[in-house]
Image (cartoon, rainbow over all chains, first blue to last red):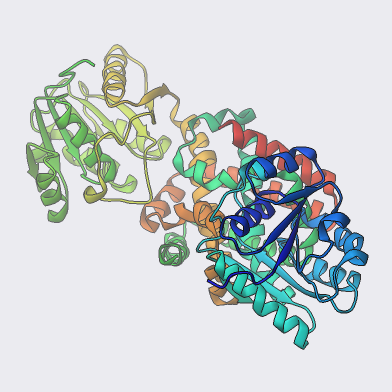
Length: 287
Length: 287
C-alpha cells in the first residue's frame, strides 16, 4: 500500500460514502491532513466523534483550501453546484473526484465548472447500502467492491490523476475499472437503478392489494427481494431523474421480459417459462 | 408441546419441506413411527442418513399403510395424482394434508380423490429457500414461519383434523392462520409468486443487455434482490401455471405501478417519484 498519495484531502459531504472514505483515509494514514465539510451540524459532530476528520467545516470553500485532493460526496443533485462553489478556492494542481451514482450529466457539468490546472476524474464506488448518513459510515466499506472511474477528456494531467485515484481506491481495498460516463450510466441502470425501481414498484403493488394486509405473511424471499426498497427515497428520486435515458431504456427491456412471461403464463407455455427461468437461475448461481 | 398428536405419520416426498418436517417430527418425538416415501433412491438414502424416517419406501401405497397422518410433500403438480394413488390404502379416520405452494386447484382435486372417512386439510408452510431436496432439509426450518391452512368443506371431522394439524405446526414452532384456498392463492401471488417472477425477469433483462457483461459489477443490492432467481425453474414453472389467474392479476397491478413510475421519470416528476418511493420505503421498513 502506497502511503501519502495526497498530503491534504478534503471530503465534501460526510454521508455514508464520504464518511466511510474519510474513516479509511484517516485510520490507514493515507493522507497527512483530512478536512471534512458537511452542511448539517449533526453530520459534522458525528464525523468528529468517529474521528473521521482532522477538522470539520461548515463551508466547503474553507475545507478545500490547500487540498491536493477534493472528493465531492454530497447527494448527486448537489455535486455540480458544489464544484462550482469551491472552484475559485482550489489549489493549482489539485485533483478533484466525486462519488455520484450517475456520471454522464455531472461529469459534463463539473468539468465545465472547474478551472484549468485542476484535474477532474469522475468516480463511483459501488458500495451503497440501504442505510445513509455519517452514523452509518464504517471502515472497510470498500473492501472487495468495485470503484469505477470515468475520466473526461484525456490529457497528461487527467491520466496522472486517474492513476493516483486508482491507487487510492485500491489502497482502500476496492477493485477499479475505467469506463466512459455513458457506459457507466447504462451499466448502473441495469444492475442498480432498475433493481431499485423494481423493488419500490413491487412493494407498491403488494401494498395496493388488500390494503397491504398480505404483507404480514411475507417470508424471507420477499424481505431479501425488497430490502433495497427501504433506501432513501430522496436519493433515488435524484438518481432516476439524472439517469433518465438509460433507465427508461432498461425499463423497456424489463417490461418486454415481463410481457414474455405474461404471454407464457396466459398460454400455459410451460416450456417457455422453464427456459426463461433456467437461463436466469443459471446466471444468478454463477454470480 | 403436545406429544403424539399422531401415532404413525407418513411423509410422501422427502424434499426440502417434507424432509424438514420429518426431521422435526423425529427429533422432537412428535410421533411414534415415521414412514417416508420418495421416488428417487438418492432422496431415500439421504433421509436414512439424516435419520429423518424410521423406514423409507419406494412406493407411496406401502408408506401410508396404518398411518394416522399422511403429508403430501411432492412438487405441486404431482400432489393430486399422488392423493389418488394412495387413496385406497388409507386407514379409516386418517388425516391427510399437503404442503403445496398453491391451494385452490389442488385442494379441489385432492378432496375429490380421497374416500369418505378421511379428513383432508390443505396446508402451506411458508418456509422455502432457494435450495431444494432432502440434502437441504434441516431441523427448525419452520420456527417463526407462517404455516397456512386452507380447509375444504367444514364438518366435524375436518375441524378436528384442522385443530390437530395446527397443534402439530405450532409444535414445530410455526405461526398458523386459516384462509380460504382462493384467498391463500391471491396472497401468495402477491408476496411470493410475483416476486419470484420479477426476480427471474430482472436477471433476464440484465442478461439481455451487453450479453450479460454488466452483471460483473453487480453489488450487494442486486445479489439480495435476485437471490430468489436461483430457485428451481421446474418448481416455479408449475407454481406459475397452477396459480395462473391470481398471478396474472398481481402482475397487472405491478405493471401498472411500473407504468406510473415510467411516466414520472419521463415527465421529470420528482414529487411523484418521491411520493411512491416514500410510501414503499416506509412499508418496507415496517416489515
